Image (cartoon, rainbow, N blue to C red; front, side, top):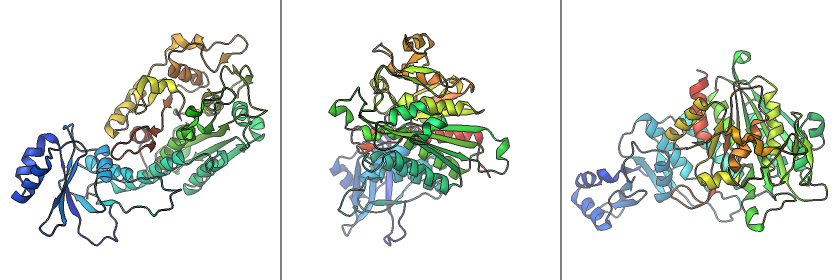
Length: 466
């Protein structure tokens, strides 16, 4: 978005698909045509060419969009932000309101960099004058929420442990005048969150549960309730089933589900969604010490189901099961959890496609459709009931892992499903929360997956206050 302090006039940026490149070139003055021909530019995806003016200034820019697939969108905007030099720019051609909004938000998203620990001053970046028909109110609240969520994922556990994660949710509650509650340490046992306590007790940082309740309308009592839950494992050693060193390198991101929930909740409350929100986030570190929970231990969960610990590195489902049981104790229209739950989901779908499970396939398909519109994909996966007996235990009601090496993402989802029985509509997002490779507008680092898709879905379903 634009910086009012920049006095220079905005430079036109032409967004051009490969199929349009020839016609675009012939529409330019001859010197510009010759320049583009010298550069060999043909509208290739994410390739920018700066067109000089008579005095050597940047007179215009041509940005390639690649093969045409509808209008320019979110990731085009993100790549544009990463491709342009410092300066003030504007889009040369008109776009629909939806495309203008998507490109503008994408441009803001692509400008994010994690700079907390760098001594050098931030490099001045390109700014974009937003199109007049872009929904700037949405762009501003989404940009704030998405930046904050990515910042949390990028922050190492030395500066973002359970206490700091809980504080982020306390500040969110304060910003939106929501009720905030927290149970910490031994208080988790009296409050009925024994599995959360068991997973987090080995750390010097006390485990906790953060809860927010928000009702933004006067008639809130008559509105449906949505419960959002996020896995907040601030660092995961694997516990006594300890990970190899290479497996721990990215474990600061194991609270990516909590970060996604924070961003989504912030966007929904800012939009004043016509629903009541309840947010539950278990915040723990899965550490190793003398009082760490062990393979073979049996945990009696909030729901009363006993769980044999088959592997201490399957801790995410244990902290979530207590939170899901708490969510299920009240009538809800919808329960949604976000979690960096399984490596198996990445094996099946890779890092860019979160797995989406749910008890109502019509709603799952609606969310997936919203994800396609938002360029924030989610891939529907089955809750295959024939696999449920794979979670059987000889000493408890169920085990937290299966002996099978197959279908790990489904087993994780089926485990969680056992803790939602009173409410019929539950969805589970198994996400990666990380960009594993550098791409224009998507540097290696934190990624918030599913947030924009669910925001569209929930706003469509419940509406917003006038």
